[in-house]
Image (cartoon, rainbow, N blue to C red; front, side, top):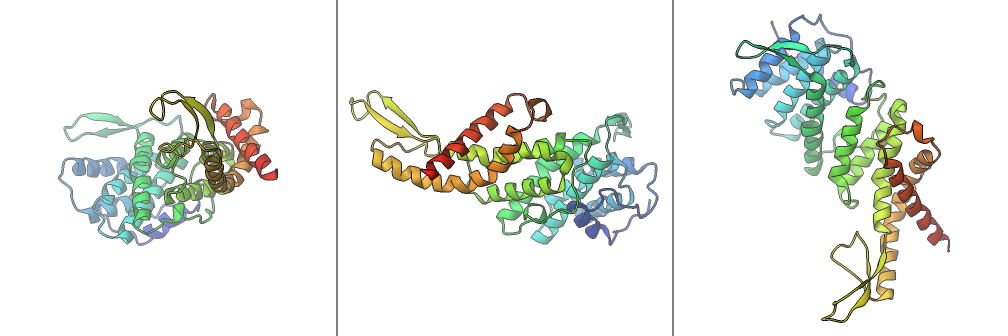
Length: 331
């Protein structure tokens, strides 16, 4: 098979990322053995026989351009793009690698369906094995595209996906929500309790852009956005007045504690109130962002909320924290 770099690949990737139709018109007919060709490259990389990043990127570009409606081809293209990220020597190249992976992942999501049979691909030893592309593309997203996107941002380059730019359409297909859930959970694990870290803003940008572009997923995204902001409000405003024995060399006493200040307690009410005012000031803008999403969830019947069992109890806790902050501000 003759391969060459497709000049439209970069623009296709940006278009797919920012929401153009997920399945582009193929530049040429996708051959029947496309998945095997791509998989052979993946195996060559794993065995150390292929180390040329240009060839890897060329083949991924070709698959994205030529086989957009073949989910397993897109999954392998995302894996190849992920493999190329580690060889990037400058921010421009790394940003293109991330965008290429996101494009393939999006096209996999749109083309994938639960009834499709896995591709049967030949292994290097000649045996055949089922290939589960949806899982592979999800791995590319969670272990490569998003972590490298964060590294790129920490180095000073904000990828369009987390810049707050509007998407023209949803990067996730209407018929599947597992991958979106996994992405949201990754953001949660990464930035939970880190409201003062730049990554908190990047997570907010990403989820807010998805919310605006993905009406079919707004129910889940209401929860993810309520969680992003609401759990920080609850944590920042949760003061407890507790009695501890044997403090101050045997003299028990009352102290104030707050989970946002794990190394600090206050035994003086005036000190506590001053610190509380400081933390409340941080919590209020977060509460403003959480409120509309919490309100939606609080007025949605339980059987229509597509989140984990028991999660609505957490929404109620966040709602109480936001309302308490409101009431204290009004006093």
